[in-house]
Image (cartoon, rainbow, N blue to C red; front, top):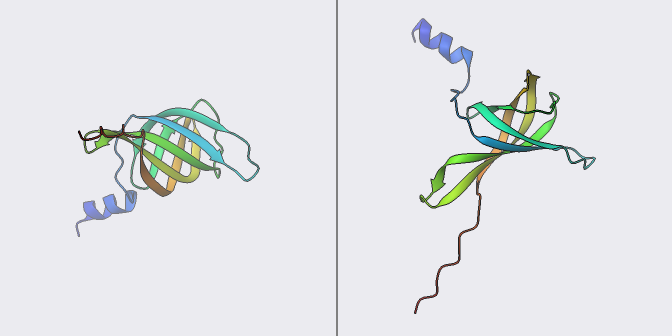
Length: 117
């Protein structure tokens, strides 16, 4: 392994992609308080999401975040990436969240198929 490959592999565990998409998040807490907000992604990887927010999101808080995904299911149905994880950093109106689990969900239900005649 070359020294350049070693340096790159030690720097990050996952490549980051500069994707700007609308996001909506909510703080997951046991007390049931409804802390929520929205913003835009700055960059994303398989391990985390960096996003903007007007509200202060404290490191250590657990979040659920929904990202409007750029691709569609079967070129017809909008998708959302829904991820849960922990805030690892907040500064300058940007929060970094470590992804602990995620799933893709359909963003809207499809219209019922017309009955065959």
